[in-house]
Amino acid sequence: MFEPLGGFSPETFRHRRERAVAALGDGVLVLPAQPVRYRSRDTEYRYRPDSELFYLTGLTEPEVVAVLRPGDQGFVLFVRERSPEAELWSGARLGPDAAQGLTGADLVYPIGELDARLPGLLTGPRSIHYRVGTEPRADRLVLEALTRGRARGPRKGTGPRALVDPGEVLDDLRLIKDVQEVDHLRRAAAISVAGFHEALAATAPGVGEWELEAVLDGAFRRAGGDGPGYDSIVGGGANGCVLHYVDNARPLAADDLVLIDAGAAFRLYHADITRTFPVSGCFTGEQRAVYQVVESARAAAVAATRPGTTIAAVHDAALAVIVSGLVELGVLEGDPMALAADEKHKPFYPHQTSHWLGLDVHDVGDYARNGESRVLEPGMVFTIEPGLYFGGPCEGGAERFAGIGVRVEDNVLVTPDGCENLTEALTTDADRLAELVGRAR
Image (tube, rainbow, N blue to C red; front, side, top):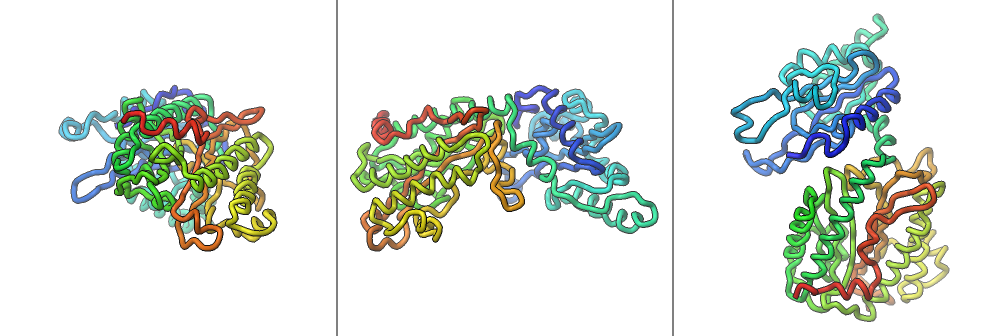
């Protein structure tokens, strides 16, 4: 079970709720916990709390529903009651009294009273901010409230008439990280760097991709993390060209590169790192040539990251290096700017350079507004991860690079005067990275 409040103060969540209420207008926000999910029959997956619910309340239990609205008694919780029998199997529950003391909620009810009490909380507001499909009981009650609002609203002038995605209120709040969130992200990054050092040291010909995955998992937990924040990618040889390869089922060959994309979570906050390195500890000429293009693209994107520029400009900085590099490698021919405009790089670099990072590894936030790329502000955290992949049919100048996949990924925080690379403790220099390979052998 994840620790309630996750190391944050109760005041942090109160401040977040105040900002959310200010953005709600004449609306109500309903946030249910993630349901318990099952692997098969009665075997549960490890429970992971809902990010939005945690962001506003700090609660990490299943079967919680939070209601937030303007006015008196505006923060209402529904939680599980204490149950000695259930707690014998699944651990202690907060219960309504402890939940109220922990969060400062105005009202806390047992979750069994949701059907009786939630409809009354949804009667007055003009809109309900709720994501349909999250929790069946809440889905039904929200839809019933909207039906009543449509029927009675024209005559009574009250009642909800619109359903709004909670992201309209919460995404922009979550996009800018506060000081405590940045501390959590730094810790997740440090734990992830430690895990990568252990995986690099354990790498050798014949080692299974699955073994390196196990090294990462153990290292993340030993260093105080929650464990992997997502399924680790350990792709040797051509498997490194599969962007979301997670089978991790092949032994590593001596002439392989291995691409590891992994990151620890720390109190629900994520790191996301990729490094690509030779299993033998020595790059071949072709491997090094591709690696240097990708590493130069990463460095260019980091250098472009600063307040006032756009997230698209960060991608463009990496893309310019990638396309020029493909020309220098003999893979493409022509003017790099024209080639980029025509997307000739797409077979080899099919993805964007960045995604937001935070409570979710692909965190919330729009990348564009009204057709314009998002302007970077201090407190934004995102990945920089250019790559080149020669996994498909390779012809012409690409043929000599067949089977090579390289991605290099760091995590950056936008600061008032530039950016902080949260993962720079893990080298991206080709020679220094190769020197770390196999030290445990």
